[in-house]
Length: 339
Image 1: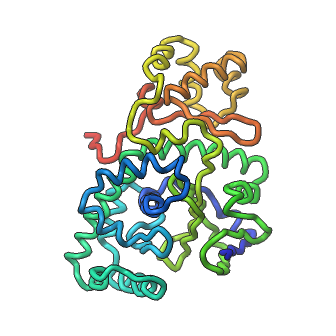
Image 2: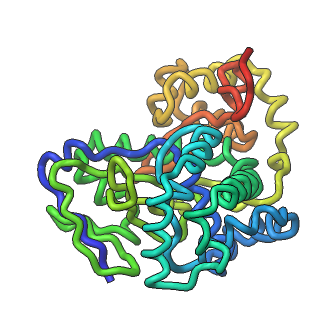
Image 3: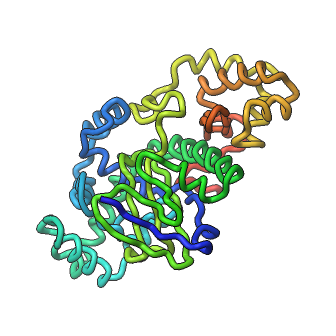
């Protein structure tokens, strides 16, 4: 079955990649946890989180089946700080909770306790607390790495946009799950549906945990429809280690020692100042040869300080949170009080 999204010229002009969306990523993670697909990529993470799942997190998890409908009021596809998004969930109007759960119940069973959710404020507070625990357990500990993946993917999308506009971006985002058949984007889906955008455009939401494409339209109370799709995991190196148990990358100590060299430090600084640069661009900006730039980038990547994505035959280099932190340019971690 296919979810067909119909574009006008105005829709193409207003379509853009989304910023990382913590609760949307959480919904994808909750689904992936209960599936058995992509074992090589996801099983290390599955084993890690299942072993220590907090009892309080299971309430929120029970509302998100591996295959089926999940309440978007609980995990909205919007960008923002996790704490702010959790407050938005707590403030969900009763009528929206009631309407969405009723729609879900038409397609699949819902937990017995959830039937009282719209009328029981204390129960909704308990669910929001459970959601916070689930986020921290499944996603929160990996968030800096997930943001790095989004940044690497964004560098590829920028190249696509510069090379062929939004239409090339739509065609190349994830050909396995989405096919651009102008003026319609066909998304492989569990439903057969036509969505006419009528000038509003869409947000493209790449996801590390997603194992399939999903569409959240304006019927879910979102300002714009959002297409969530898997980030292409065939391109970046070292993917399985990302979702495994937390540990230092192999060879980190030796690689970090190598950074004391002046040229390599300059290469890292250049990548931080020009995220998404190619190896040839990196060499020109850092004042070195392409072969030398490639060698230094390899060491930086093995140390976890940069991430490299591939677009066609081109390597695109972006800094990781660890690399920015080493330079003193890292963002405050979630929940940090800068005062």
